[in-house]
Length: 296
Image 1 (spheres, rainbow, N blue to C red):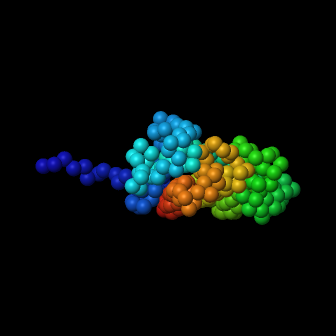
Image 2 (cartoon, rainbow, N blue to C red):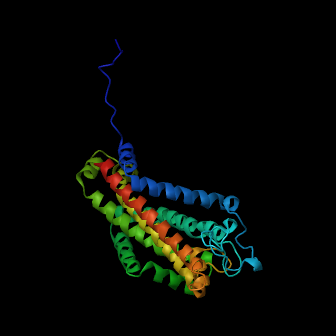
């Protein structure tokens, strides 16, 4: 007779486990997550995985078509540009400059914006009112236009464009966190925590943070997508990454004259930007829905 424990307790999934179970049950979300994992792999190991030097110019290989073309070769799988540089290698190195920098800028904006947003929500009086109106004013200006304004003062360049995008993203986090925390502070369970003698740290750590995860996921998703667009747009306009850096927007800018002669030089960087933003939005939206299921 098999040994069966009839008194075994049923395992209750934690909110994080419930969120992951819901997320992993979505095939499209998991495929997008794996795609982002591959991008992160290239982000870290691009110098090793890239087949050629991204800045190597080869006069005998100008505008080599991709490998699926009759004139293409497998050695240059995605073809070459008008200077004979391997496009695949440049796209792989460009992941660091576009996607990697977008992640970095969004993470820094998340830390700064969340800290200020929480501080503004739990404070009262003149300080909270001033921060509230400043954020409303900053958010009335599109992030790309705000970045261009900062670059007009700082000067063009990748580092300056990243700093400008960071300054443009921080108000979005401050405003979003401020509203979310302010709404949570009005709820009865926060009042109960205060009556129990909980200080601000315990209220934020154990009361508010678990209930604003959805807002954080939504803000990070939008910030990373916005940062990729802004970095690429500034590179395209010549205000961000400068040639010969293989940033995707700069690659687009340098190939606009070749759209009819060598369309792959324009299409491939554009598809890279589109694909990355699409994957981020799929993962972010699916994760947001999964977090809601975990909280409920």
